[in-house]
Length: 377
Length: 256
Image (cartoon, rainbow over all chains, first blue to last red; front, side, top):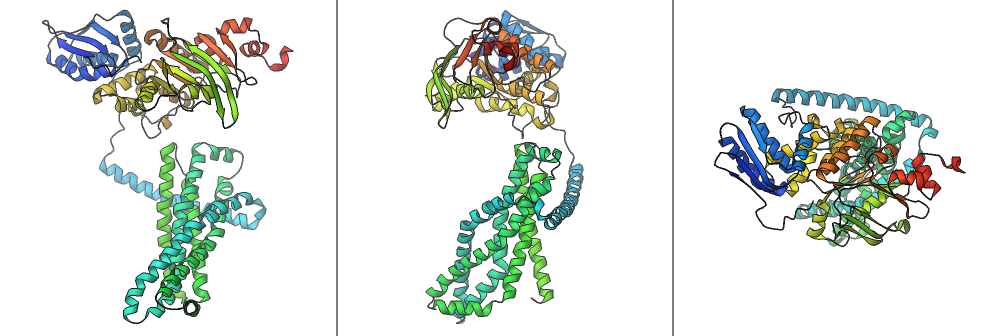
């Protein structure tokens, strides 16, 4: 557009002449209309009888200017008055005609229909119920898909499994190592202070060994997996859904669950125990720093560690890690597959995958605590 | 409606490359004010690439793009923003923002770049939408519309700030013949009443004959402009047999 807003002159103006007619003048582009819109409507609303609008001094008119004229006309219709436009140049009149040709009314709804509070509660309830039943359905379908994969491993796309192992496993090593090291260091250091007051700082390796192997190792690894890989699964599959790639798979006769979800869930199942072991190793290295700074030798630390933990501790930790990985990867793939349309739906399903993943981890962890207590391990 | 004088867009010695692969090699042309200028070419000849360089999405390997005499490529900051605001772009798939209703999509540039009161923006956005026949759908989300409607809404959004130039990438691809003809009609009436210059990438022959004042045709092999002129002229009198085949919609084997 040839308008130069940097030229600071009066671009457009509106006045009322002696006969009560509106006189518009200057450039009625978006900058000009911004100046005259409110005063013009106020003048029009304040006048009586037929509304005359004199446009002979309008030097330029575009969509914004036409909108002003349309609004003035509509104001007259609302109040049952006549509106007489005068002085429009030929091309300006043609422009106005072009804009008003297909126009039915301005009053049509421009916002979403209002939903009452009660209805919102109802909708929320229905959505929750549908989510839960979807989840149960997904659990069943994915169990079938996984079972079928176990029964005939030839059907699994192993290439995808290995590449997911790399992105979700190998590439996660640095962050897992870093967090593990810091957690071990911090746990040992924090407990060293009170334990030392009782002369019990020799028990730091016992505490570290049991808490890391049984609880924190699998838990934190699963949380990192949810944030790192579960979200990635949801975003990737969600984008595929939006691009109709999932539909393409379905119409090719390829089950999206078998094709997309099974390789990812299997990969997560393979790498999470390894990541947990890696996490624990780095946590113990972090603990070793603290313990040796307290004056104990590394041999003492290792001996205490070996004496305090059992194979059962390691095994329960790894079983938990495997179950968590199933939950996190499964929920990530499910969120991806249930994505709606549009870019914001991908964001929503990624968020949902992380939130639901974390909740499931916490719930499963609680169930494991009860289960292991009852079993006495 | 075309005013004589300085061309509104001029492309000078533009070379476009992705990495080391040259797509368009040393191309120059002008677009006159108020004309419908069509960029043609076979698949993979770099039509969309040329368009994306003309609207400043990609920096060219060399050459310059002048829009109303101002260099889009060298410009930066406020100057570049001003040039970008002087044209609108309708993307191939619409590129409407999925989280906003149609009217919010059209209102977005108005909200960001003008001081118009809320009511004025709503009226303007409604007018633009009704211009492309989407007035009653203003409150819907893009996902609730058909592909053709999304495309028309994208044109309405491109027109939000009343730009002097509108670039359209494959506007009629995937539209039925009637909708496509309506779109052609819309383009012509906008050109005639508002004097908007259109730069259109398309290969719909019917649409080219209906709207094009002038076409340039890109060649995949030489990466240059192979033909330039009015479409009827090129169909009947083009020197290159490939160009005649294109306009007569013949397969490659039938000529020789």
